[in-house]
Amino acid sequence: MVSSALLLAAYAVVCDGFQRAPIRDAPTRHRRVQHCAEPSEKGWSRADAKIKQRPIPRHRRLANKQASRKQSERLKPGEKGTPTKLRVIAGTARGRKLESPETLLRPMMGKVREALFSTLVSLGVFRAPRQVRHMDAFCGSGSVGVEALSRGGAGCVFVDLSPDACAVAARNAETCGFSNKYETCPRDVAAALNDEALRGPGLDLLTLTPPYEEIDYDELMASVASSPLLNADCVVVVEYPVERGKPPFRIGELVGVRNRRYGRTALAFYAFKPSGALEALRPRPEEFEEFS
Image (tube, rainbow, N blue to C red; front, side, top):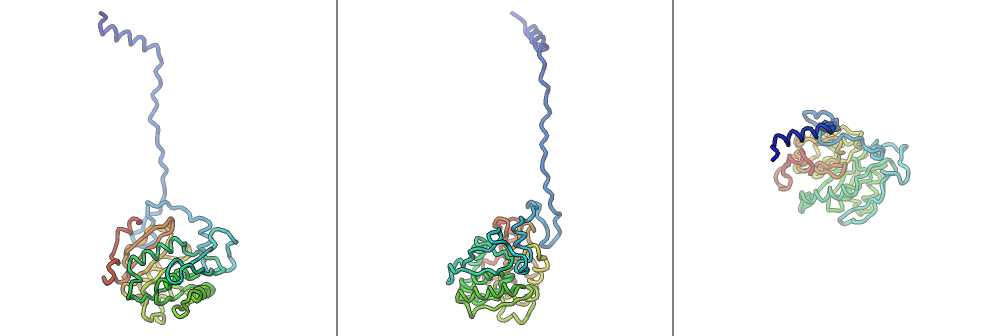
């Protein structure tokens, strides 16, 4: 029998006749680094490292810039960003068509408006016997305010720097049968929020849909938090682009109760001095860390 030593020697001789394939280094994986703004310690302007910082698309920049302000800069018919087919979603005026101002305007998307009111209903905002007085800030066509009136709101103040926008909001309210339930205020929103003359019975709902690139959100929300117009348990809703990062959970007497994302649009819900009368207005700090 051939010894194992001889077999090993023969195998070594045979192997020497072949060229061994070069050993390739393990492939290096190059990871794309995403650069995000450094988060600040506090305030709305901090960027979330988990959200890629992308430029706002051109059609959104066009629609956001000086929304309801410059009549000289108008979108062409059919161009993205042109308001089309605005209708009341639910309530006594359901299905009514709404007029839009003939100015550069970024109306709240229908699906976002529907989600907004679905959340407000779940929070008990329109639950009887509450008589909800609403301010529709940066109102544009007034679609948000008219929707609130359609769902049982007791009154609405339409606020916009553009007199044309306020006039259109008033016509929409009239068309839907709310002639005695609204007033218009063509002026700066921050000034209106601090005007004691608008106090009346106070506000139970405040919605803010500002032009994204023209507003300092920290200053705006500071004006809201210090406003003398808000009643206890007033629900404040502010629309913002996800590119701005997450809003703070607490702003003065405002406490975060919901924070929801719809594509690249988000809505932050706050309660002003929550008293516990509405059980659904419980603080939810976790929603201001991760979107729901």
